[in-house]
Length: 291
Image 1 (cartoon, rainbow, N blue to C red):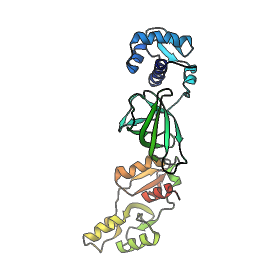
Image 2: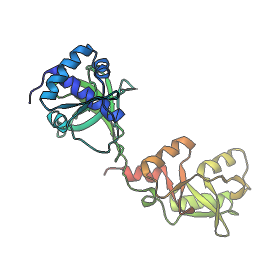
Image 3: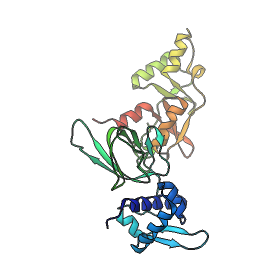
Image 4: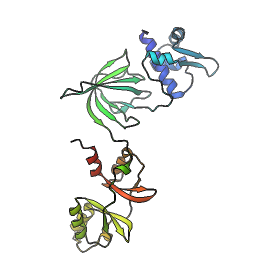
């Protein structure tokens, strides 16, 4: 079914507004979104109802709703439950818009990769050269950054080249933690702790006292201590007693943000509230490395 541009604009706006509000949408609301006269919207709605693309809802809270045929005509998948996949233009979020479908082009080109994203919402403000970001997506937390290279208003799509793609595995953090954790005794000297780090090729470890984890120590802690001329101290004197813990059932994506939030290189992973392992920035980088 071939629709006029204004009819496509009306249906796209109606679908987007209905998704946001989960109720019938008035013609005036659509007119405001697509910057058209309300009378023009009403006239077009009569045609769209005749085509079976919209249905009218009577009453004070009435308005219009898109039909399943409207989604089919625009090749938009209709979902009962959905998440918004945000779009950013020049580092600013685009309100009332979500990515519906992403396609990758020229993936065999060794020098460039292009993509196309179909959008539910307005694409009219996007122009060539705009900085562009999609995501994060809800499952794999995929983020795509690039530059707009064009726009296809017939399919409500944005064309872009890809400069960067970031995605993290959806597995739980307990599947990446180091288990059992390497432990340094609370009464060890900093020389003994340093030799322990070198022997195990690590930059930090949990501190234990009689089988109980009581802190964490890193190379940084030891370096600061030596710089102050303190050589005859024990691990318990310089360790960090406040442990930053994460539940083992958290996803890696959510945990990674904590490294930056707390400015630490290692987190303690707990299972049922009991410390069971550690996760370091290096562990994450090793997991994401492509060989």
